[in-house]
Image (cartoon, rainbow, N blue to C red; front, side, top):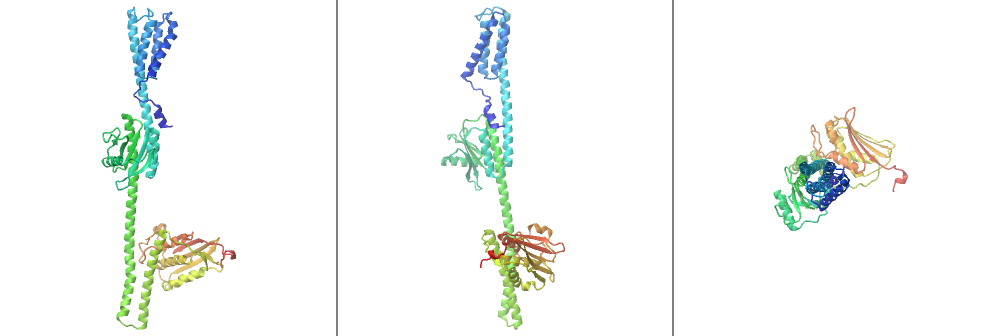
Length: 510
């Protein structure tokens, strides 16, 4: 049902006096008199009075109180002049006819008035129903709207349907109490003078402009959008005609519902910002504390070993051990810096994958050589099938991926336990697995294992919690996937699946 059209089709409670209604009443009473002339000779003038009463009642359903009063008066005079003996005179001989004439006029008039009142009540009932439905429709549409733009779009659409608004603009605050235009209907930008009025309306939460007590010399009206906690903005409208009291209440209710929806969106955005800032603050503190701890250890090692070497002479084997400590600490420091730089590259989107054909054995041995000292306490195995073909990857990125996965296994697997690095090739996909027989991954950690700064609460080892997140980013840069699982027999397994072309001779570029 088109509620807007129904409202426009209902005549208002203030019935406008139109000359054609008076003319219509006169013509209908005249025609009725002509039709009833044959009854004049039959002495049926009482029957004629009933006919006139019926006609007056019918007229009352179409015209206002003025034309009804005219019809009642004309019908009484016509009935007296043409039908009450003596005919063609306003003189009435019989007392009962005088009483009948008076009663006829009163009854005709009351009949018209009561019918008009019934019509008026019907109008009010229909109008209340239509407006209730309109408010329900607006509430439903606003409840489904998500975001300020959708709320404004719904507001403009509904206002166009239900109000004769020639121009309409919405101005909302942008967080600094500065009003910005967010939606309009056939409106031009407001002038500098009107901008000052708009700011006054926003700051004082009072309407101004045409048909108000404030700044009423301008042709548009400024309405504040009242919220329960904040004022989201204002509406600027140019009406076709001023609202009556009922329509004014309807309009203000509309603006209140729109304002509440806007306030809801503003508060949602504010809550999101607060959540974002809280999360940023938490991440900053986590990163700061982790970096402080991780930097302190290798730096202290390097400083201590260097000071020992400088301030005293030591046998060759002691010097060798000190140099090894310096190198290990330097590598740890370099790993930390590399992880931070790689995370920065991932978040900025500056990762570029340079694919080429490589032997997976070269990749595995390069990573295992870099971690040779760290892998000594474990039973480390590399498994590569004999049929393993060349694969198309970015060697440097995948080296970093495997490095981080092996470091993760080293940090969380007890000494002497098994760590396995293996590969396979199936259906055009490279499959790499890093598995161990340690305690496995905590169940509560599995859903967020690849998120930044994720570390097990029971972990006693260092690290920023960036290694697995970086590994996931580098694998996805290859358009691949990485999965973390716990094995049934115990331990964790990380599976990498990367699409790789069939290494046929036609795909190899020498």
